[in-house]
Image (cartoon, rainbow, N blue to C red; front, top):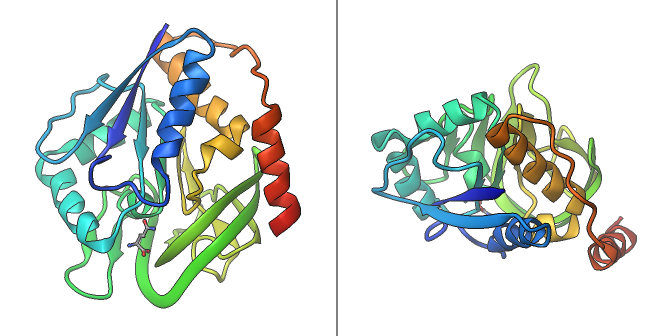
Length: 240
Ligand code: GLN
Protein backbone atom coordinates (compact mmCIF):
# COMPACT_ATOMS: atom_id res chain seq x y z
CA UNK A 1 0.00 0.00 0.00
CA UNK A 2 1.00 3.62 -0.43
CA UNK A 3 -0.10 6.83 1.24
CA UNK A 4 0.37 10.37 -0.09
CA UNK A 5 0.55 13.02 2.63
CA UNK A 6 -0.51 16.43 1.33
CA UNK A 7 1.57 18.92 3.34
CA UNK A 8 -0.38 22.17 3.04
CA UNK A 9 1.86 25.26 2.87
CA UNK A 10 4.70 23.46 4.68
CA UNK A 11 7.09 26.18 3.49
CA UNK A 12 5.00 28.94 5.10
CA UNK A 13 2.98 27.34 7.88
CA UNK A 14 5.23 25.28 10.09
CA UNK A 15 6.04 26.58 13.57
CA UNK A 16 6.69 25.06 17.00
CA UNK A 17 7.80 21.76 15.50
CA UNK A 18 4.64 21.06 13.54
CA UNK A 19 6.66 19.17 10.89
CA UNK A 20 7.02 16.50 13.56
CA UNK A 21 3.48 15.47 12.68
CA UNK A 22 4.52 14.71 9.11
CA UNK A 23 7.48 12.67 10.39
CA UNK A 24 5.24 10.75 12.81
CA UNK A 25 2.72 9.87 10.09
CA UNK A 26 5.52 8.95 7.68
CA UNK A 27 7.40 6.71 10.13
CA UNK A 28 4.27 5.00 11.51
CA UNK A 29 3.30 4.10 7.96
CA UNK A 30 6.81 3.02 6.88
CA UNK A 31 7.25 0.87 10.01
CA UNK A 32 4.24 -1.06 8.73
CA UNK A 33 5.68 -1.48 5.26
CA UNK A 34 3.43 1.19 3.73
CA UNK A 35 5.12 3.41 1.10
CA UNK A 36 4.87 7.14 1.79
CA UNK A 37 5.10 10.19 -0.43
CA UNK A 38 5.02 13.69 1.10
CA UNK A 39 3.72 16.31 -1.32
CA UNK A 40 4.20 20.00 -0.51
CA UNK A 41 1.07 21.84 -1.66
CA UNK A 42 1.69 25.57 -1.46
CA UNK A 43 1.15 28.97 -3.05
CA UNK A 44 0.67 28.75 -6.78
CA UNK A 45 0.30 24.97 -6.98
CA UNK A 46 -2.96 23.43 -8.09
CA UNK A 47 -4.66 20.61 -6.15
CA UNK A 48 -6.67 17.91 -7.86
CA UNK A 49 -9.18 15.54 -6.23
CA UNK A 50 -7.50 12.32 -5.10
CA UNK A 51 -4.01 13.85 -5.15
CA UNK A 52 -3.50 13.36 -1.40
CA UNK A 53 -4.77 10.64 0.94
CA UNK A 54 -4.39 12.80 4.05
CA UNK A 55 -3.76 16.52 4.60
CA UNK A 56 -1.62 18.23 7.22
CA UNK A 57 -1.73 22.02 7.76
CA UNK A 58 0.59 23.53 10.37
CA UNK A 59 0.63 26.72 12.39
CA UNK A 60 1.92 30.08 11.21
CA UNK A 61 2.17 33.76 12.00
CA UNK A 62 -0.42 36.32 10.88
CA UNK A 63 1.67 37.46 7.88
CA UNK A 64 1.88 33.93 6.44
CA UNK A 65 -1.79 33.42 7.19
CA UNK A 66 -2.73 36.45 5.05
CA UNK A 67 -0.84 35.04 2.03
CA UNK A 68 -2.22 31.53 2.54
CA UNK A 69 -5.78 32.69 3.07
CA UNK A 70 -5.66 34.47 -0.30
CA UNK A 71 -4.12 31.48 -2.06
CA UNK A 72 -6.70 29.06 -0.71
CA UNK A 73 -9.40 31.13 -2.43
CA UNK A 74 -7.60 32.25 -5.62
CA UNK A 75 -6.18 28.81 -6.44
CA UNK A 76 -9.47 27.13 -5.45
CA UNK A 77 -7.45 24.72 -3.28
CA UNK A 78 -9.80 25.57 -0.42
CA UNK A 79 -12.76 24.22 -2.39
CA UNK A 80 -10.89 21.02 -3.27
CA UNK A 81 -9.73 20.42 0.33
CA UNK A 82 -13.31 20.90 1.54
CA UNK A 83 -14.74 18.44 -0.98
CA UNK A 84 -12.01 15.90 -0.22
CA UNK A 85 -12.83 16.09 3.50
CA UNK A 86 -16.53 15.72 2.73
CA UNK A 87 -15.79 12.38 1.01
CA UNK A 88 -13.88 11.25 4.12
CA UNK A 89 -10.24 12.18 3.45
CA UNK A 90 -8.65 12.84 6.86
CA UNK A 91 -6.95 16.11 7.73
CA UNK A 92 -5.07 17.52 10.72
CA UNK A 93 -4.69 21.28 11.07
CA UNK A 94 -2.87 23.04 13.89
CA UNK A 95 -3.39 26.58 15.16
CA UNK A 96 -2.88 29.03 12.26
CA UNK A 97 -3.85 26.32 9.78
CA UNK A 98 -6.90 25.42 11.89
CA UNK A 99 -7.97 29.07 12.01
CA UNK A 100 -7.99 29.31 8.20
CA UNK A 101 -10.27 26.28 7.90
CA UNK A 102 -13.06 28.01 9.82
CA UNK A 103 -15.28 30.80 8.44
CA UNK A 104 -12.68 33.53 9.07
CA UNK A 105 -9.78 34.73 11.20
CA UNK A 106 -9.83 38.42 12.24
CA UNK A 107 -6.25 39.41 13.20
CA UNK A 108 -5.39 42.50 15.28
CA UNK A 109 -4.29 44.46 12.26
CA UNK A 110 -5.28 44.29 8.62
CA UNK A 111 -8.26 42.72 6.89
CA UNK A 112 -10.40 39.83 8.12
CA UNK A 113 -8.94 36.66 6.56
CA UNK A 114 -11.60 34.48 4.94
CA UNK A 115 -11.42 30.79 5.80
CA UNK A 116 -12.79 27.89 3.77
CA UNK A 117 -15.65 27.16 6.22
CA UNK A 118 -14.67 23.53 6.59
CA UNK A 119 -15.08 23.88 10.36
CA UNK A 120 -18.21 25.79 11.52
CA UNK A 121 -16.15 28.18 13.62
CA UNK A 122 -14.56 31.63 13.54
CA UNK A 123 -11.49 33.17 15.20
CA UNK A 124 -10.89 36.62 16.63
CA UNK A 125 -7.41 37.85 17.61
CA UNK A 126 -7.23 38.72 21.31
CA UNK A 127 -4.81 40.48 23.63
CA UNK A 128 -4.23 37.26 25.59
CA UNK A 129 -1.27 35.17 24.53
CA UNK A 130 -2.48 31.63 25.32
CA UNK A 131 0.77 29.77 25.78
CA UNK A 132 1.77 26.61 27.63
CA UNK A 133 1.23 22.88 27.93
CA UNK A 134 -2.26 21.65 27.21
CA UNK A 135 -4.03 18.40 28.07
CA UNK A 136 -7.53 17.56 26.85
CA UNK A 137 -9.99 14.70 27.29
CA UNK A 138 -11.16 13.42 23.90
CA UNK A 139 -12.52 10.37 22.02
CA UNK A 140 -8.82 9.34 21.75
CA UNK A 141 -8.41 9.52 25.54
CA UNK A 142 -6.12 12.22 26.92
CA UNK A 143 -4.23 14.23 24.29
CA UNK A 144 -1.16 16.25 25.27
CA UNK A 145 0.42 19.18 23.45
CA UNK A 146 1.71 22.73 23.61
CA UNK A 147 -0.23 25.84 22.60
CA UNK A 148 0.84 29.36 21.65
CA UNK A 149 -1.83 31.55 20.11
CA UNK A 150 -3.64 34.84 20.61
CA UNK A 151 -6.56 33.93 18.38
CA UNK A 152 -9.72 32.80 20.16
CA UNK A 153 -11.80 30.30 18.20
CA UNK A 154 -15.55 30.04 18.76
CA UNK A 155 -17.41 26.91 17.58
CA UNK A 156 -20.83 27.50 16.07
CA UNK A 157 -23.84 25.76 17.64
CA UNK A 158 -23.89 22.00 17.10
CA UNK A 159 -20.20 21.79 16.19
CA UNK A 160 -18.18 18.98 17.79
CA UNK A 161 -15.07 19.95 19.72
CA UNK A 162 -12.05 17.65 19.52
CA UNK A 163 -12.15 17.52 23.30
CA UNK A 164 -12.53 19.36 26.58
CA UNK A 165 -9.63 21.16 28.23
CA UNK A 166 -8.23 19.45 31.28
CA UNK A 167 -5.24 21.78 31.57
CA UNK A 168 -4.48 24.83 29.43
CA UNK A 169 -6.53 27.30 27.36
CA UNK A 170 -7.93 25.50 24.29
CA UNK A 171 -10.07 27.24 21.67
CA UNK A 172 -10.68 30.42 23.62
CA UNK A 173 -9.83 29.99 27.30
CA UNK A 174 -13.51 30.36 28.21
CA UNK A 175 -15.79 27.47 27.16
CA UNK A 176 -13.21 24.70 27.85
CA UNK A 177 -13.55 23.36 24.30
CA UNK A 178 -10.40 22.58 22.35
CA UNK A 179 -10.25 22.07 18.61
CA UNK A 180 -12.96 20.86 16.28
CA UNK A 181 -13.75 17.61 14.48
CA UNK A 182 -15.78 17.32 11.28
CA UNK A 183 -15.98 13.90 9.52
CA UNK A 184 -12.32 12.78 9.57
CA UNK A 185 -10.89 16.29 9.76
CA UNK A 186 -9.42 17.61 13.00
CA UNK A 187 -8.35 21.15 13.81
CA UNK A 188 -6.78 22.12 17.11
CA UNK A 189 -4.27 24.37 18.88
CA UNK A 190 -2.01 21.53 19.97
CA UNK A 191 1.54 22.04 18.74
CA UNK A 192 4.19 19.89 20.33
CA UNK A 193 4.29 18.31 17.86
CA UNK A 194 1.03 16.59 18.56
CA UNK A 195 1.25 13.16 16.91
CA UNK A 196 4.54 11.71 18.25
CA UNK A 197 3.18 11.84 21.82
CA UNK A 198 -0.36 10.82 20.84
CA UNK A 199 0.10 7.63 18.76
CA UNK A 200 -3.58 6.65 18.96
CA UNK A 201 -4.55 9.81 17.08
CA UNK A 202 -1.73 9.32 14.56
CA UNK A 203 -2.92 5.79 13.78
CA UNK A 204 -6.55 6.90 13.55
CA UNK A 205 -5.57 9.39 10.81
CA UNK A 206 -3.52 6.76 8.95
CA UNK A 207 -6.30 4.17 9.19
CA UNK A 208 -8.93 6.61 7.87
CA UNK A 209 -6.65 7.65 4.98
CA UNK A 210 -6.03 4.05 3.89
CA UNK A 211 -9.67 3.00 4.28
CA UNK A 212 -10.92 5.89 2.12
CA UNK A 213 -8.18 5.28 -0.48
CA UNK A 214 -8.61 1.50 -0.73
CA UNK A 215 -12.34 1.40 0.00
CA UNK A 216 -12.18 -1.26 2.69
CA UNK A 217 -11.79 -1.71 6.46
CA UNK A 218 -8.08 -1.74 7.37
CA UNK A 219 -6.60 -2.86 10.67
CA UNK A 220 -3.13 -1.42 11.26
CA UNK A 221 -0.73 -3.86 12.90
CA UNK A 222 0.21 -2.61 16.38
CA UNK A 223 3.60 -0.93 16.86
CA UNK A 224 5.84 -0.93 19.95
CA UNK A 225 4.76 2.46 21.37
CA UNK A 226 6.74 2.19 24.61
CA UNK A 227 8.66 5.43 24.03
CA UNK A 228 5.67 7.34 22.68
CA UNK A 229 3.53 6.34 25.66
CA UNK A 230 6.32 7.16 28.12
CA UNK A 231 6.48 10.67 26.63
CA UNK A 232 2.70 10.90 26.78
CA UNK A 233 2.53 9.76 30.42
CA UNK A 234 5.35 12.09 31.40
CA UNK A 235 3.43 15.06 29.98
CA UNK A 236 0.20 14.02 31.71
CA UNK A 237 2.03 13.52 35.01
CA UNK A 238 4.03 16.75 34.80
CA UNK A 239 1.35 19.10 33.48
CA UNK A 240 -1.92 17.32 34.33
N1 GLN B 1 -1.35 33.85 14.36
C1 GLN B 1 -2.26 32.94 15.04
C2 GLN B 1 -2.45 33.29 16.53
O1 GLN B 1 -1.57 33.84 17.15
C3 GLN B 1 -1.76 31.50 14.95
C4 GLN B 1 -0.41 31.32 15.61
C5 GLN B 1 0.06 29.87 15.51
O2 GLN B 1 -0.14 29.20 14.49
N2 GLN B 1 0.71 29.42 16.60
O3 GLN B 1 -3.49 32.96 17.07
